[in-house]
Length: 479
Ligand code: ADP
Image 1 (spheres, rainbow, N blue to C red):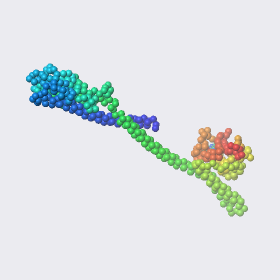
Image 2 (image 1 turned 45 degrees about the horizontal axis):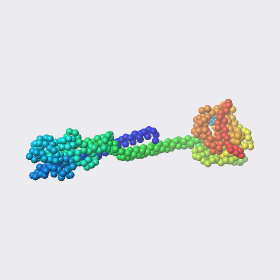
Image 3 (image 1 turned 90 degrees about the vertical axis):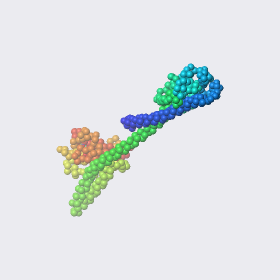
Image 4 (image 1 turned 120 degrees about the vertical axis):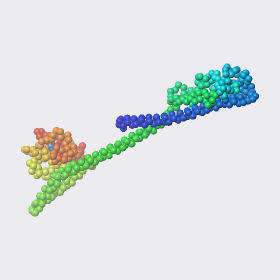
């Protein structure tokens, strides 16, 4: 993956993760709030039930015609009501109770009678007297209304305001001092005589955040984005391959056209020779004395036809990898004699003199006869092409000699030579400077020389002309 698409994938993953994480957090918040709301309602009901119970006790006591003495009554009520600290009444305006008479009791009883329900008289932040219209009074400790362990688990802090200061009924240490999101609800208790405001809070600390869901979503969204990126990459790769295949097909088509033209160019030489030979044979046919000449012309035609077939198979070798060429020790004099026999008449017509010098007569190049013939034919043809517009003496010098374990043919001409910028590209397929040229001749020569473990090179001559050398392994000389 390139850095750009990696950054893009990372960005997509971040965006996807954030959107999902916010949704998860919101769901979690709604869930937590729901639980907190329910827990607060339960706590409020529990406390309210206790306060209503106080009213019921007071009503029962007021209804008794012969109530027991408060000192005796208190121990029997206390086990069922741990919040009860004392009780008493005012029979005939005189206090009788398990505790000393609280100050202001008569006034409170008067107020209760006015309202027709019990009233509270706070002692401190936690304790209060509940005074009924009948004068019966209960001293209640609000801290013991409900044991902290009995409150539902979804609460953090719970306070009840009996007097001025809120009284803490529940304080979970797990929430102390930690940062987080605080949920809060306030409700009064249900009993009309003790409607103390109850406040409940819960802090959603980092410990309660949905880490597992977030982690799961991070992994899932990462996989999702990686999968999407891989799918996109494979699609782009498939598109690239299709495009490459299309380009290759186009290139093949144009190469095919050029190859077809190149084959025509190469075949032109033997076909022209066959034509000339058969015409000559036809002319001589009626004359019995010319029979040997007719035979010779027909044999030469057959030889050219074989060459043409060989050229086609060599052309195929240029485009298709083929097994290594046949190797045999060749006679350079015989090879050049055959070449001269074929080319000299035509060259003579162009005013070109072809000479052959074998500096090492005993030496034999190792190679494929047809391939070597074709190389030499091409080089001689190129030299003749180069000499076409040259005034004065036109000369192609063919030379052969053994050099450092190789046998080297050279074809030199007295033409204009090779342009400096053309030299490095001379053997590249389709490189040509001639109007009718195909640029396949030297490429083919190079391939053919290579298939025989040989080498072909070109240089300019002084004062003018070009020289092409073909080096082949020499028979009898270890490589
Ligand atoms: P073509 O003959 O079709 O152009 P070749 O591959 O045979 O293709 O030759 C490629 C080019 O090499 C020619 O176009 C020409 O510019 C250059 N060249 C080949 N032989 C000679 C030479 N003897 N003298 C000068 N230039 C040459």
